[in-house]
Figure (cartoon, rainbow, N blue to C red):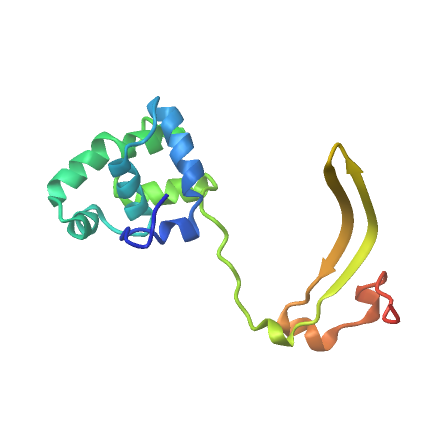
Length: 163
């Protein structure tokens, strides 16, 4: 996994990199090398091959050749575009995003103004073979900020305000 001293560590915030590594390894027939993983994270962060080379103090031409001979081929095989041509390095991230490897962007808002309603429908707690088993059926409703002023009891029919 990447760390903060990795210039491309932010890829893990927006992409399911571990799954991409595994799926590309299945196309390659063996695990990706650390260099391949680093180059891939660079692409996933939106860096061009030249920018990746600059950040890694490598030859831009060497990184470009590496990408053409390795990752580009693996991604083409993974997304079923093995006869397609990589017109631009951005094709790689576009294809991986279309294949569902990009994580949904988190929606950030100030939660201090929100009202949350949690209704526990059913809870079963039991101990089996030295394991605590908890089965919970809950409903969590958190309106987005624009809906807070429009809350109505009909939206949460199971919510009893007296509990």
